[in-house]
Picture 1 (cartoon, rainbow, N blue to C red):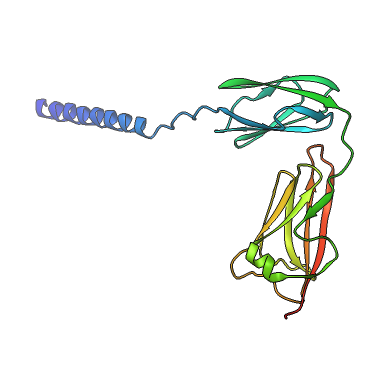
Picture 2 (cartoon, rainbow, N blue to C red):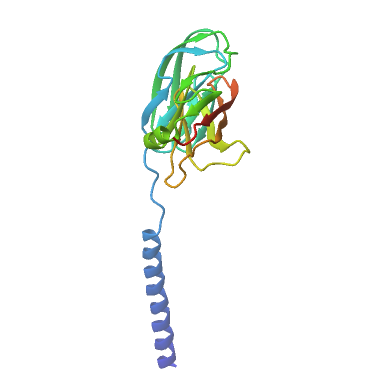
Length: 216
């Protein structure tokens, strides 16, 4: 009987020790606390903003518990977008999140109802005899707009097939970057197609057609 009791006691001691080991190991797998988020920039950083405009705030890490003193805020990753409508006149905007606050000052103007317009670029709509070698050497095609926009653009054939260049929209410019092996050719019709919007949500369908010249 004594021997049986001793065996049972040793078994309990072993199970207790094992539980301690497992418990300590659990601490090693605990999730790390989220890194604090710090304010990086705002676009626009200040100045005038339309009553129906928006403000994009960027952080170095994903912010938590974001609130604003005016407008509505939507958080996606490291960015927070603040949309109106805002009241015309001076706007002292305060952004508050779990790790801090940031003050931004604007002057709110009348609602913006004008869509962005194409103002220039490497090629213009209707251009003919465009030198493909010059464009391939530059490895890029740019389209400029009347204001800052967001959206997408693509380089296509006349039939609507994607040529394979990389499209990027940033600030008041859209850029198409050449991918090696996807150079444009001679005597071909190309279309830069896409859609862009300004901060107030006014959108423009982009359609710039150009024709490259024949081989010399």
